[in-house]
Length: 125
Image (cartoon, rainbow, N blue to C red; front, side, top):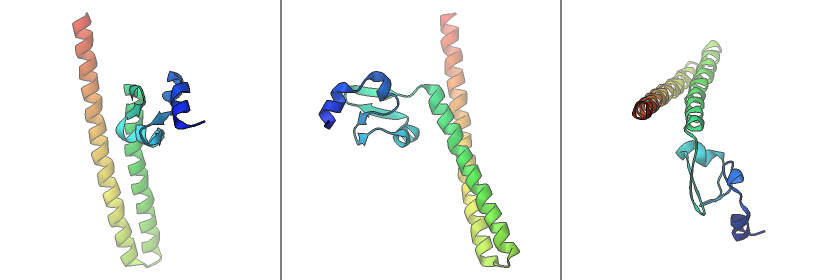
């Protein structure tokens, strides 16, 4: 079954979890990074709660990476490899910095979403 046939038989429920997109198969990574996945018949937007979950998971991965690099730096320093330990501690600090930046952006996004929801409720009520 070719790409054209797949486009014709792709149901909306299946497109939500992956379908034929502009780069072939629209998978998890494209949705996670851009939260937008182009489909042949227009666009598909992720639900805001799904995007928020991916953002929360994204910054936690950076913090986990920082913890692993710090642990590796401690082990290197324990085994008297000072230069390597200092380099690994620097890498861990970069991971921690990116984790804090992405967490700050995630919290801003949540605050914007909360204000938007309150504004919509105020206009309806």
